[in-house]
Image (cartoon, rainbow, N blue to C red; front, side, top):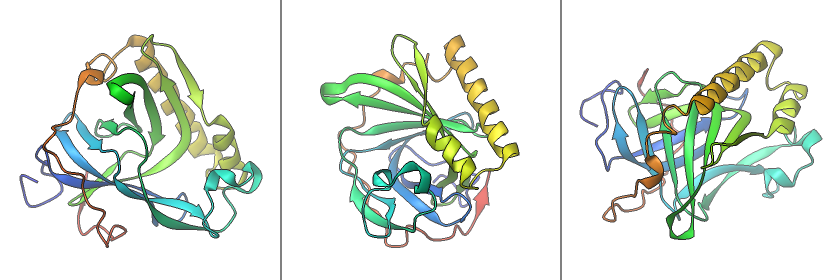
Length: 221
């Protein structure tokens, strides 16, 4: 970081944590060490390399959350586990204050596959990274500029399970509509050429720290 507090910007190559709190719990249940690509007042771009050790939620018996029937997926007891990110890496782009981030996915050989709009709480910035809360609903966007909603069933179930009230759900839907407008206009970041970006081969894969779930000492916008 180029300064002493979270309002300053990280330098390319810095390692930070991209984290999500559990809905309604406030406790971190997803943590992904990432490498900073770009950090300006307009955009934070980070790279999650293949093989990165992350933290993810699992059921209390260690099985995948998605193995649980939808009706009880958000009420069954959970814990977290460390696991390596499988497959290709992910480039994540986030503009300050926006209630979504945009992720880019590639197939093997750097064949670009799609963008993924992850609807979420605007990220809280702190000295070690950024924190957010996932809002379940997502959008896939393809190179031909077509798009489709993702996880509408989980979005509906989260409401039935009491993780999201009507007012918040309406706000998420409105954020989704604004994201769709951006897609239809083919605005940033879809028009910015990030699909041609490649990571610096000298970058090493960031480590997952032992205190990955620490409470931030300082927060900022």
